[in-house]
Length: 208
Image (cartoon, rainbow, N blue to C red):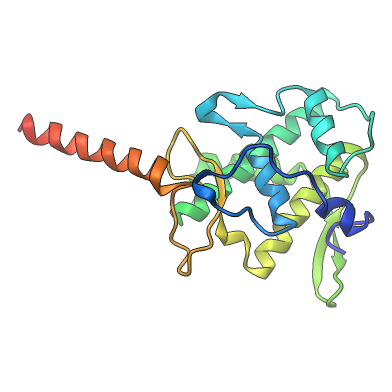
């Protein structure tokens, strides 16, 4: 099983995100919605971070069956979790822009992913996959990363994206037929970016 020794239901049956998805978008299908919720615990445009302390991280993981209730999170574990979240957001933005990572960004992503313990395993369909290793927070992060690996294998990963607006980067699930959505909401971020570009062009023409 890709989720390691825990029963799949304990990971899939999670609390819904308390923040509605922009534009009325549907969330990603389970268990990929867990990755979407994890990334969206930080909303840069609102200066909001639901995992701002080790205690908040412990509570978030416990509420989703990824960590025992009352477990403590060390400073190093807290930093690894935040690094993983940042790396996943960067990868989701790559799904939006369909371009390669810069050397610096690639090194950061590799470092964050490499710090999460995974081991190879045989999946239910007889293919080779990965499952979480370690204990506590390390295992919880491994559960999350194993979901990412599984979704990359089944093709759903490329539909999970980060909004193209620099100050937003909200993780959304692209259900469009040709997988070309770039904004969490065309009516919000899409229009704001297009209006800004239009104004810049008008300013440039006026100064020519």
